[in-house]
Amino acid sequence: FIAGAGYLTVIAELRNEFLSAKKDIAANMSEVSAALKNFDMKKANESLTAITRQIDAIKSQAQSVGIFQLFALGGKLFPVLNAVPGALDDFVAFSGAALGVGEEIDALQSGAFQMMFGGRGHELVTRLDALNQKISGMIALAVRLQASAAAVRVSFPSDYLALMAELYRNQTLIEGARELLGTAPPTHLAILFQNPSEMRPTGGFIGSYAVLTIQNGSVTNIDVRDIYDPD
Image 1 (cartoon, one colour):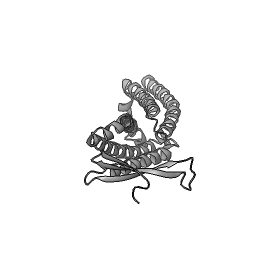
Image 2 (cartoon, rainbow, N blue to C red):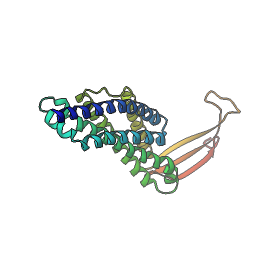
Image 3 (tube, helix red, strand yellow):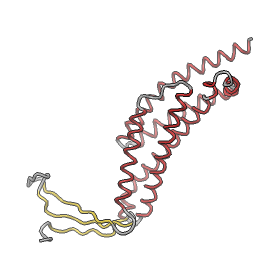
Image 4 (cartoon, rainbow, N blue to C red):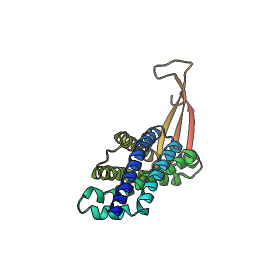
């Protein structure tokens, strides 16, 4: 009886800790969503790291007193208990996948220009493909995590839909950039240079233009011409 009462006390303490952590996790999820929208990967990584630490702390404390084994036994009578360890694992996996996405975006933000204009276009294309795959994995984990949260009767953070929308938006941008960079044959892009001091409906007089030739992610040629040259 005393041992049972002790376990109940530990479970109650863990429950209170989880409820407290849940508010912090929800707040961090909101920050992740906002950071992804602004491509602020440093902030997103900080929030994701905080989530992972909180979940790991709860798991460590639960494992140290054998709560998960108790849940496995109790799960035969109360299935919701059996789903708790898996739900925590899903949350850690989701945070880990998101951190991987953040690392890829950081690398592209700091090095994409050099790759594109420095003859390393193949590396740029490879990184974009890897990022696209990681975002797909993150989306799949987010869907699974929502199901896990429902299984343990925990409401998913309200920013879940906003986060998913940002993931899909970013994936669309990456797929568009990947298609634009092309492989073979070369892709040709026209860039128009406008002079805002000479007002025109489009924003300014178009005095010159450039034609970029892109192949396998690298800019292989830039041809700048006066707007009257085609005449």
